[in-house]
Image (cartoon, rainbow, N blue to C red):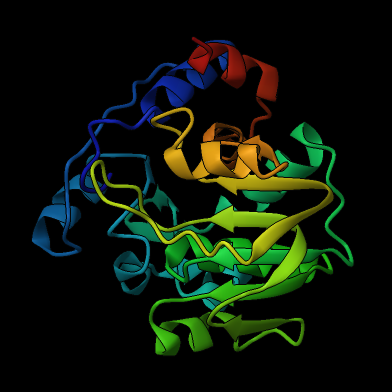
Length: 252
């Protein structure tokens, strides 16, 4: 659920998970950009909701219960509807961490990481990285938003023009076709460095292609999507779905 939503692969992952577990049900895309009355109607007719832009922060206030991660970052991406009670969590951060540690063999503890952006997805990634022991620099176009994103953590700070070699750089700035995204060419690759763009369509954004040319190993947002969905499904239905099942569902 979100807007725009037509590109989302989430229902494909969720249907694959339902099928694997032999559970009756379906998954659909819902175009919605407001936390108002239309959301109430949707919530009353679903068991679970996967939330994306621009609702991750605004729907927090609609939750009756949230977990510690959602409380720290002020955003949710997963809602479970239990008898009229709306429970919220964020699985973006743990999904991102699994994507880089399991798929790219990156141990972030003690590593120098730059996160571009400070929105809902960025905050969940910053949270996960900081708790895992990374040294996190956040590049935010809005200094106030950036300050809020790093405020809970001793090992995160906001910078304007980073000029350093990094072990990991993560682009969370929304990709819009035809629009340029900031380059920050002062960011260079340390040995074995990884660049992640959390966008998964297109499979390789111009930003990611340029990072490859600078010597970074690269990853798009599909592994993060898969792993956060795996955590979502585990919470929604108390069931474990192997990531291999989900990757197979969205493979070309």
